[in-house]
Image (cartoon, rainbow over all chains, first blue to last red; front, side, top):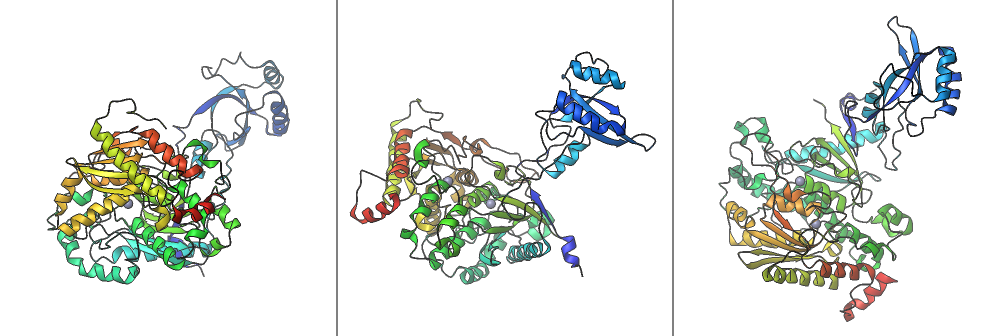
Length: 407
Length: 194
Ligand SMILES: [Zn+2]
Ligand SMILES: [Zn+2]
């Protein structure tokens, strides 16, 4: 039996680079000609010798198309043409290509082919409208890039449901919510939702929030009134007003209109769901592994790279060289099997695509995969406004997926 | 590591505030944290300071800027400031930080609507004020009328006492801080560099 729900849900990989339509992709000109299908192999062999497509290995030599009468028609790329070449002006062909044309009575024409290999399936499909290319999906060693099995998909959907429920838990006002998961054991490590107006934690660090989940819920109740004060009319102002409380969607909103709030009690404009969840997971780490700080210098050394600091050129030279990334540490240290470095190997589920602050926080904390349900055209940093997963200079890269919800 | 602004004449006040930020960075170094520090200045007064605490907290987002911001918000919360008062003070704040704010912190500073940032060395890998992204100069238009303008820029000047900032970082990454061999650190220091 196929689960009906599963059919409606969808997981879409958000690549490092935005897909480029063929109209905007760089192309090069090539001479091509229709050929007899039975001669295809002969042509390919000969042309690969005399006019190999050196820097265009993704371009297929042969194009198969149906002609007007619905008959199969094969065309072959003879050789590259200059960008100024006209259709009828094929005098500049290499001698041996010209010989081939003459002996088979070919009539060459100019065609455009995409200059660079496709970086995504969408891009590849677009390229083939011009002239067929080949596409090799990148082989990341990250689970899930090339597709999710049924079981994996189901667990992705289940965790996303947890996040969505959490986002609704504030009452009438939707907020962003985050769920950090250890996928290897299917366990929720930490959760969080926006606390722009419900920050109550005194120090922001230390152990004052040991009982976060419980106190968090009660805090929400006790501060319910302040939510209502800040957004008194949200239910009457149309659906988009319902989302005005989603921190990542309007990060600058906190000081905007409707601020008849008396005091800044509980105000913290940066307490976005992802930041809250990261803090909660760090707190869990300190609570579960209190004594590990000084026995894990290698981890601390690694953590330096994630911090704000710049990188003096020589700093990799000591023992840093072999601690490139958290996964490698896994192999070296038994401790990591129970206590990973930061959020290495963990996934995060967010209801909305995170803003730039949150997306970078997730880079710092070494999240492995990000799943979000709704794009954030105003301020999203995973494809909408910025695309941090494609910023090569960053020292950590997560894979990003959008989970399309049914309905 | 050099950045715009270096070579410019900077005022004695700017240097004095950056000196305080460097002090914070040294404090971080003493605590075996990445030596980045900052101070927040409003109307000529230092109203908060902060330094990196990523190792201690095991929270890689606890950068100096975030620490200082939390100090302020906590204080204002206690003093019963209104939201608009908070917004107003932030709009008068100048941050002095030893290293270019990362993308996360630069985004945070824009969210808060801070007035100005002076930084020491550039942040080649994560910098959000020109190195990787330029969040300080962003000022997107609101998508719907009636919305608050999306993205606030702030004035940003780099290269203030950059060499001091870099040498602290170098100390940290290469061999720890040679100037301050404190007894309580000697054991852990050895562990770091064996
Ligand atoms: Zn956010
Ligand atoms: Zn930062």
